Image (cartoon, rainbow, N blue to C red):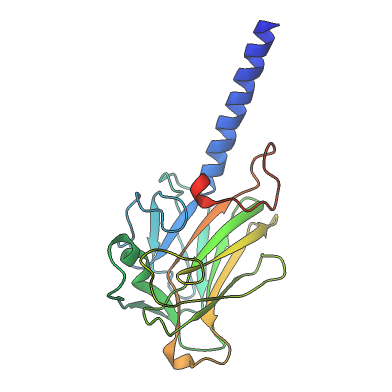
Amino acid sequence: MRILKLVLLHTVGAAWLLAGTILQAQSINLDIGEVGDGPPATYAAAGRAGVWNSDPAIHGTTSPTLVDIHGNPTVVTLTQIGGLDLMDLPDPAVTGDDAALLDDFLITFDAGLESCIFMNNLEPGTYEVLVYARMPDPEVLSYSDVDQEAGNPFSIVGGIWPGQHEELISYSRHLAVVDEEGSLDLHSGIVPGADETEGAAFNGLQILRVDIFSDGFESGDVLSWGSR
């Protein structure tokens, strides 16, 4: 009986270790900007610390495969349509690693043309998604959404920098279900009715799959990033 118990404990422990490894492999951090210009791996932003991909996400191109937060290569790529310009425009209130993420961004000046990032080859499942969409001018807001979120709700992001990341100040949070096609489509555009000449930003993103465990979590659960 004792031997059986030890075997069961070993099996359960191995399963949790494997599940944790798979979960972390689904974590991807992306800073939109020049290659090599992203935050360090110690930086968590509003999500989880780890290696940051930095990519200019040039309009109409597909970027090479991304790495996960541990620096391991994945099969995930991204294509960007709509954000025609990459801008570097610091907000003096934002400093350090926060500035590395927020100071450079895709921008659109067309109310009918959002900055759209299409992520490809993701594993099917439920993902928690953070879209960073803050303009340096706190009076200029961005309008963000994720196609695969139920009901496709929109968020308005922007405002005075409070000294740290806050939801709807520097980012929006979404829960998205990726199907067998493996696509995740994220957008940031001009708030309806706003002055389109002031633009709207897309600074970066973080994704984490949240339905990977069959024991303890259920598909659709939104977990606190800090608890991971």
